[in-house]
Image (cartoon, rainbow, N blue to C red):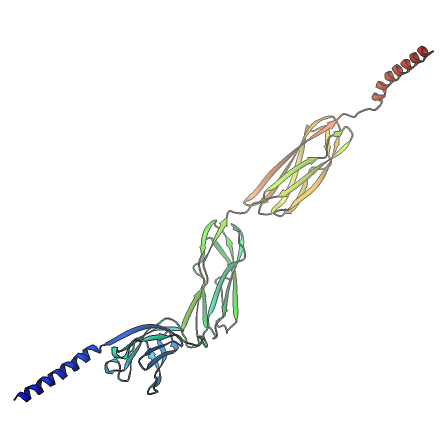
Length: 386
């Protein structure tokens, strides 16, 4: 009887120890973000990310192997679908699940295993990652002017380039919405080629006119496309700020410079300068003038006309003046021109002096008395000498 009791106690201890060991060897898991070529090591198992087969459909390809060669299998994993190897984690093997696919180069992978297998570790790929047959489109949007004013015409260029290793297909450029600060003249919306091979680029140009001043944010252009596996990808340009200034206007400065005083019956010159110091052209420039008092100073022709004076340009000319009567005269010129929002007028003045003619024989009359005095003094000097 005693022997039966000892045997029962021994069996109870064995069962208790077995259950204790089973409780200690629980199933655990680890999550890793893998790039193509990276792998997870756990015990003798190796799980390597080979390829993202489809981002859209959530399919990744992994290779699962063991160091001793007992297992070597490459399998397509459907996202969020568990895959068991050697019976799975509950039976001492491993369970692999692709929980998220970020892009065509990386995914999040969960590995489940018994704690007795050790600690799961990530091993980065020892070879550089090379994405085969993967298109990558860059997008740029630019204006042909840095300084814009109301009324200016602006050319917008959209450039798309494939810097990847695969053909980009089903390319669509979206440059929306239209900006209310511009009126769209031609070429909008932009059109880009449907497909671009590696290294190939394409551009589209459209023309706008600035109609409203202010600071605005130019939105990004988004380009969507697919690769050879019909995975949808996209990229966009960088948004930027621009300032639209008020409408440019000409600023025509009229300057008059007389050559100097004029004597009666003599001639002089009035030098005239028209300088456009504004940011727009002055067109249909007409110069007219008058002289006050109206008699005594005569101008050959005060009127002048120019078709256009560009910003920063200067037009110079001279007017011949004739003095008829001594006095002070005011010459006034007025320039009328078109620019900005309509007609504009600028005025310039100059003072011209006409002197009376000088007669040289009057100076001779003053010299005669001096000669007489000098001769008399010389005569007296000779008389006293003897």
